[in-house]
Length: 426
Image (tube, rainbow, N blue to C red):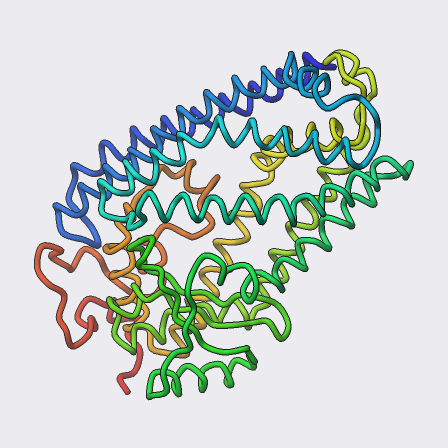
């Protein structure tokens, strides 16, 4: 059985690397062609940034594979020898802390390189090493407290119930729902500062859009994203009464009010269409399949790894194999997500004006240095958003009519819209 597991994991890694190599080759060719959506220099830089991230991903995949082999051939046995083979909740929590600690130490250099080398050289990272250390310590403390509680509950379920896979699924799904409620108001403020959006025309317009969409939220907040990153973003977070609107301060700096309202209109489209519940349902389906499959593995597999199948080992093995199942599940989730993005674009354009949403998307892709083209197979596999060119064309934008080395007109972009799709001017 262990050989089958290794074979499946090997195929997963090979496919990951193959997709990355295909993406790198595609972008290397496309970045030298006529630029779209941004000036030539920025277009070339965006291509280089995408390639740098993908190359790092390939190295990470190799290390991930070596780490997997170490765990199944020696790591689990080594760790169980340290913490003991007693099937208790305390032993399971210690085992899982050790499992995560090893994985974190091995992958930490990639995170640091990605942030302080790649992101910083391309102008994204704004974090200082001190800020990174402080954030990391906060994350570790949260993990020890919250993760320890979840591990203890899950270990109790695995140890006490015959059909533990069903109980484990229900527990983790409940934790995911609770996390969506707690994250915006209790966890996110630990890392970032959130200040209420000042009274004024922008806030009034946002509140009016929310009323039209039927959204009641805890408030509209500005997050100090610029202290850590220069990317632009906005989101609606939370469930129930904990829902809040969050605007990155970087977004406020780069977009005008009409463009900002169009972006929020897009996000409101996700709320209006119930996309957050759809995403939770897809995640629930994934967890159910994962626990069912890994909950029915033969006990002989653990004997082949030289360990006693305690609750800690069982949970750690599930966590080790989750990326494989996630890789299989990804294309389906990506396909559904891309459909939802088109629908949200349609809603946002109706709420705030199609020309303003197009203008905002053009700024987002340029400021975030998002290379606008992708290998078709890679895109259909990984991308939760449709290619930006396809999104813009669906909104009526004609990229072939624009010289991207000249500044877009400040009065709007109607002259670059497909006339057959041009909305009535207000």
